[in-house]
Image 1: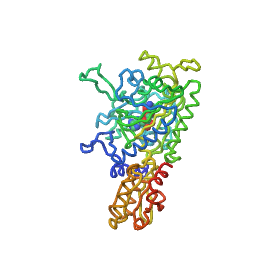
Image 2 (image 1 turned 180 degrees about the horizontal axis):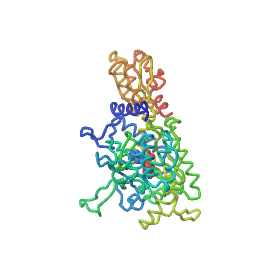
Image 3 (image 1 turned 60 degrees about the horizontal axis):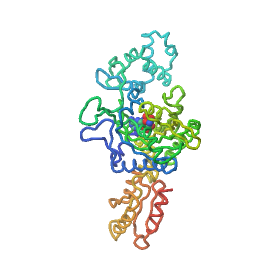
Image 4 (image 1 turned 120 degrees about the horizontal axis):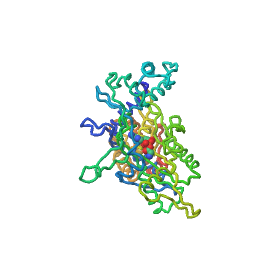
Length: 495
Ligand code: GAP
């Protein structure tokens, strides 16, 4: 990561703490790795992101909402494949006891070092079986070096030889790694008072399964016909080996998932539809277009249940990272639940008289990861009259506080008028009253948390009952009649 990019992430993390967006979980006890708390402004921003998603998904006639429980029958996770396959390869450093994911270890090694490692490995193993090792590597060909090194690390016949050549990224010692082993990422707990194997349940690692098992309940209750979808927002838990980059990879997070049930004959049409819809959703909330892209999964890298898949990626300060996955999951999930539960998951189309297990187009976004993307994307520093101002250019629909009410001075009846305005606006909007310090400073405090409008009560208000409304990005001020203020703001906020 480049230094100035790194700085931006540090600045955002620091602003998030200073202004009450995000705190480290259990901070007074030294924190709990991979867990974060949302403060007064963070909880508003997160709620607004989820609300916009919920509206865009369920305020349409073909998608229903659901809130399934976090704990589910353990057979669910056998059927879904999570018990067997939801694992990451893990290694430990015997010296410093740090734990690493094998599949991302190479990210932490410089290109030159990778080349050296490959040369050393070539001398240790019979490279005739590994033609990829016999290439002329250049020092700066990081992608190729990374590919070859990762391939050899993941191959159990060569993994140990490679690990012997790598220095631990934490303590720097060489040849200190254990062999790789698989680590299941699901958190286990027990239901009821007896902690034996028959009482084991898991904290859900994705919200999707709650939707799959309720497919027919929702369909029957809502009398929806295929194609239709079920949307859900909720917590998910993964015992990630390495958490990183603030909210990007955490152990407890929130997902916003929608599973769209379709007839297999037009799965492609719906996959393309949702792929476009979801990217547009991020754009419609102001996320910069050049910071968003699709990463289509190549056919040979698709998950075993997927026919087609893409990630919506955001360009974070540390590089491109997935914020949402869109998959054509075929009839895999419903088929598996049919097999494991013995209950039919077939849909009966009473018009065509067809009976079939629908295909599923999944859109799966991280609420917390989107929160981080919106924060980073909106952060900017700019010079105004030789003074720096920090702005969170959040879309008004996402901004935690919609308007600040500022009496110019604390006398001449201005605070009373400002308090009356606050009282009226508070009935409809999240607003903030501030009478502390110079008005310029008060504007800056609002800019920094993304408040789109600041309302100032000044001398003119006393005579004509109008106020100035300052827009955060342009800093342009308009005079508005107090009697029109709420409708003026609502119009702007919902534009
Ligand atoms: N049901 C499919 C599913 O869960 P996923 O790609 O594993 O797919 C979907 O997760 C989204 O959930 C990701 O795009 C990401 O935004 C979010 N997510 C996954 N793991 C996460 C973690 N450890 N911390 C924060 N967000 C995470």
